[in-house]
Length: 68
Image (cartoon, rainbow, N blue to C red):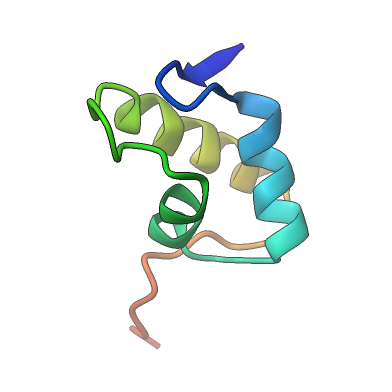
């Protein structure tokens, strides 16, 4: 399913970006894909996709802060 119509980004592309970049930073993934750079309507759905994927993936999604 398409998440970002402006950029033509699908849920699968978001999930693949998380895996291929081995990133734990949702903001980094969204920026790399260009999600939210046009109208911004997709950002909430894109973040949900990232969080859903992280729940099933060994990569822990974080906001990049170091709260340990």
